[in-house]
Image 1 (tube, rainbow, N blue to C red):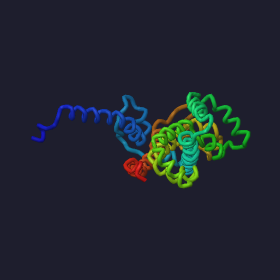
Image 2 (cartoon, rainbow, N blue to C red):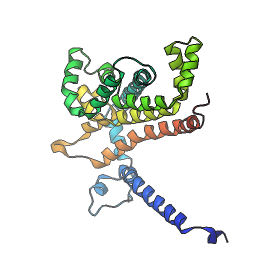
Image 3 (tube, rainbow, N blue to C red):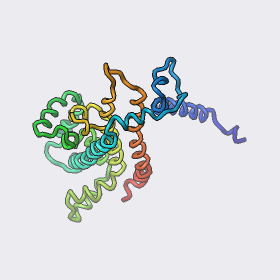
Image 4 (cartoon, rainbow, N blue to C red):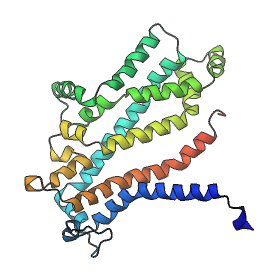
Length: 276
């Protein structure tokens, strides 16, 4: 009788979900399995999915040929620093644009949104020149400061702040609360889901970024894990795919751990939004 109650639409939906899940996880499975393949199997034709001889040589090469611990620490400092500053500056700017009435607010918002249409590569040279003039090349200040605020983050938080009831602000102002007190005690506690979402996107984007660390760091010890993997490219541009997949696996693990740690708090914050 239980089998008779299963609807065809439910079966089709489950099959479609499993198919999409398999398609999404297939690249990750290839990365994991290739990381444990010897060179002969990586370059074999036709390729095989499962390794015949499992090996840790690719992981050993990363540790032996790169300042691995330093690169991972640099990645955490870079991505974490950008995320921390971006949350502060983006939320302050978004609060001003969403909750405070001042002359030119709409024009300023349009100007901020317009910067999203400018390609990142178009601003790379002037930003590098500015960082170089300040003497910040090969420093964390040079890596973090140009990304301390983001137009997307400002717009994203502004839209969330607009959805919060204005009565909360008005009641606090009647009680004599300052704008900073309203921002800190009322708006931010109710914006935890948006802040966590922005933090995840910002951290992941900067952790995976390759071009930025390559441009703003010239010393091996100041690179990140993603830029450090380029040092393993062989003569003539030969790419050791097994080593690269092992490096990608190592780079993915902190992101997975960070997401698992934040996931429960993220769900709880959504469930309690608006009742603080």
